Length: 170
Image (cartoon, rainbow, N blue to C red):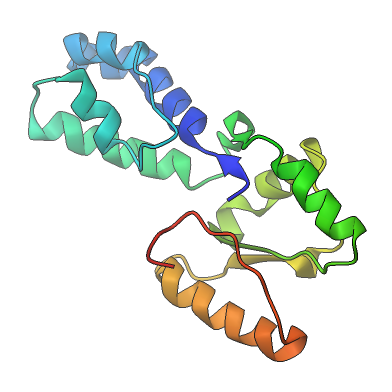
């Protein structure tokens, strides 16, 4: 729960709205997407699209969702993420106080590692080693199952752990 990803989703949708091929298929919808606002409380694209009160076809919504998924779960737009206020200062404080910092994320090891490392470094988070960035190796696995298993291993090694998480089910 370090990065606000709504800016990533917003950029993905706005660029899609500006794509000439997409605009040719969905002219009115493209105009809306070019100006769409995605809030930090939005999860995925549903809420942002619902706020626009856009009426369109199932084909449009499926196209948007596929496009968003392809780009959101990749390195392509990670540079648009912003950090939550004071997140880097807080993690740095914990690190300086002697805490072993691990970054446990549901992000794909294969598709998002490079961008995630770059963003941690860009925003000044303590990045001790590659072993401390724990990413999902199998995309099909649910975040909750993956993270629960990873946490069990960490508890055995460290005894006490503190977790900051943005997904309510976890």
